[in-house]
Image 1 (cartoon, one colour):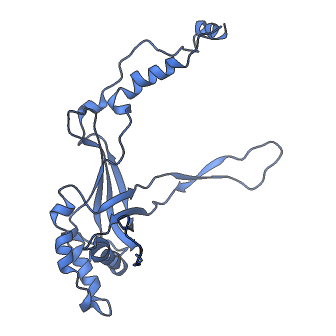
Image 2 (cartoon, rainbow, N blue to C red):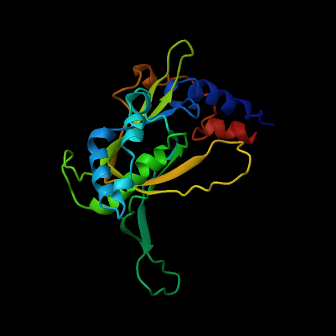
Image 3 (cartoon, rainbow, N blue to C red):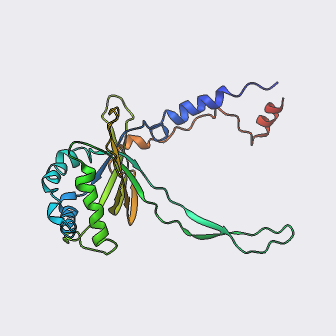
Length: 255
């Protein structure tokens, strides 16, 4: 009778996989997102777009944005109002070629092109001075007025900037967290902000507002900012799991 093999794969997984930093499990809710220069790149376009509105003189958001875009809220620890981000995936479409199927012959899969980038969803905390209403709503309006046209970053009608999402983790409880991965999204712009209902129901949870963004391209960086100890290679050891390509192991398994 063959020995029970269940503990051996578990031990190998614990010692050779989870014990090494690169293949250890990350802890959730450790991330930061940061916009690049909202005040210099986006705010002028918002002011101009608001002036185009039928009652543009009453879009009085300058004082609110002077507070919301302060470095304490936007650059010290990233955008402090952002509570969630849905990082888009990537993929290629595939279709079966031909429209005639005969006997047992199978049609082949062929590429149908890379899938379009989906919209990026971000959720923002609603505070007394609303980031969603005072800034993001104006940003979506700026995109509506000046969007889909390439513009210089210092153009008064510019509506695009860059966004960086940092994934943060730890490998040693005695050391501070560090960046595991940096994902950069280039030329993003806000295209919509969700509605908000005012009612008399008791407030038991914070209000969240969803905004949607589009971008031109993105990049992934896992080496620049993180700890070099993250990339320690597993040490070669005698396998704890039988090698079933070996005839002796096959015979032992069938015993």
